[in-house]
Amino acid sequence: MGKALDGVRILDFTHVQSGPTCTQLLAWFGADVIKVEKAGTGDITREQLRDIPEADSLYFTMLNHNKRSVTIDTKNPEGKKVLETLIKSCDVLVENFAPGALDRMGFSWEHIQELNPRMIVASVKGFGPGPYQDCKVYENVAQCAGGAASTTGFDDGPPVVSGAQIGDSGTGLHLALGIVTALYQRTMTGRGQKVLAAMQDGVLNLCRVKLRDQQRLERTGVMKEYPQYPNGTFGEAVPRAGNASGGGQPGWILKCKGWEADPNAYIYFITQAPVWAKICNVIGKEEWATDPDYATPAARLPHLKDIFAEIERWTMTKTKFEAMEILNKYDIPCGPILSMKEIAEDESLRKTGTIVEVDHPVRGKYLTVGNPIKLSDSPTDVTRSPLLGEHTDEVLTEIGYSMGQIDALRTAGAI
Ligand code: CAO
Image: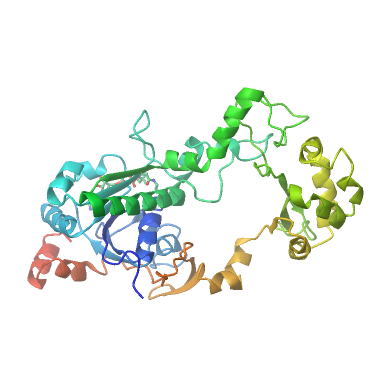
């Protein structure tokens, strides 16, 4: 079976996490992704957080599946010429260098356009145009600058960053959508274009509901679904809401049996309005279904803390999986707090290809997260990440270099 992006060639100048997330997705959809790396070292993550000496780290292998690797010194004049040939033969150039680095290499938008007017040039940057446009940015900087950290955590504690890499992987996802959209537009215009995904913007997009709440707060001074209501105080900005669901259906994380020893013996419990009577039955508080102080969502808002305390008395008598089984029978929305260990061992995630075991010639077998986006006509086969420069000869031959020329480039230090 063919792949959705068969025939699309990507010149992949990405490193670390945000850019590689994007190009890995495109590779999984069938694009030919040619990763350009510095000779000798390559993507810095190859050696970061290593768990096996001399083997590419999991950080690298888990973000660079299905790609090919070529090593080119982009500051060497001969290396620049190789790059120019590659630009002419590719559809998209993706990069997440520090601001200005591509220009300093001599590959401005104008120059790339001269070489290939159909080329789409896609970039991740920390910030869009503005006071911080020249800043280098990593994940947690973006989480802080995009509004996530100020709205995450508990009211009486400091801002908190999330384990989900919404700054890096989140922005990579945004960029991937920008690229396929630009490819689609190119089918009509014949022209390439610039695609920019700034990490601050990507995080803010994922924090959209918090900007909604900022405006609600300014208008009404109170947000009744927040844990600060009714006894706490609201300031000028959206407060940290702990584990409140943030939507119209109140939720909280509750202890389950074994919580004293197991840090993940918890369940997320949502008191969805349509199943309120069933919740009351399950926890043995039938009277709450008709009590005017508890019977409607609005009436419950001032009592949420007590309600969740009462529900927790019930969840503490069950393991999170026992609670799930019972609650699901009544369509009560809930979710176990799964540890990474439990996820790694989850059979159903392996069956769907969301968790995949991959074999690597140096490190051996390891687990990775496969393509979370499933296309019925474009299935994903996850193949290992490339060794540094593994495909230099192969790719250069494809774009017209003879073995003699390749040897000369190698002697000149260009590749
Ligand atoms: N041959 C020769 N030189 C190369 C090369 C190659 N193949 N590939 C890259 N280089 C050079 C670049 O040209 C650049 O040189 P100059 O500084 O002289 O222009 C240099 O390597 C380093 O690039 P960099 O500044 O991007 O790398 P860094 O490690 O200093 O910064 C990062 C890393 C991530 C902070 C920065 O790239 C950045 O802000 N990127 C945009 C935001 C982003 O994606 N952040 C998320 C990263 S994931 O957490």
